[in-house]
Amino acid sequence: MPVLLLLIFGMIDFGRMLNAQITLTQAAREGARAQASGLAPGPRVLEASQGLKGVQVTAGPACAAGAAATDSATVTTTYDFEFVTPVAALAALFGSGMNGTHQLTAKGVMPCMP
Image (cartoon, rainbow, N blue to C red; front, side, top):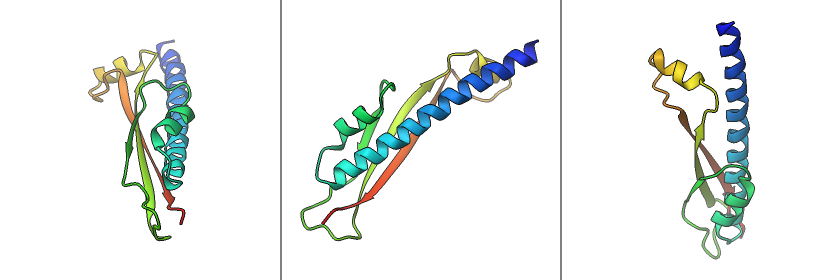
């Protein structure tokens, strides 16, 4: 029974983490797309990261007017994922270094629009 519960809890948290990573990646792409268009990436990232509270946005250099086609806009997003099951606590017993949270990051890169 304990092994079965560990597997079920692991599947629940892994599924939630995968969903958060996909959402975070999409939000980074949306932010890079906004920055490449000359808009502020922050509001677009927060709108695209629906359901994720506390997403942090780090924007690279903005596309300047008359930017070359080889220039690109870069946005990096960071999110602290919290486990809802005791999997992280159990993993910490075996020396994994998990403490109930795991930091997820994603990077979006889009070419500057001339």
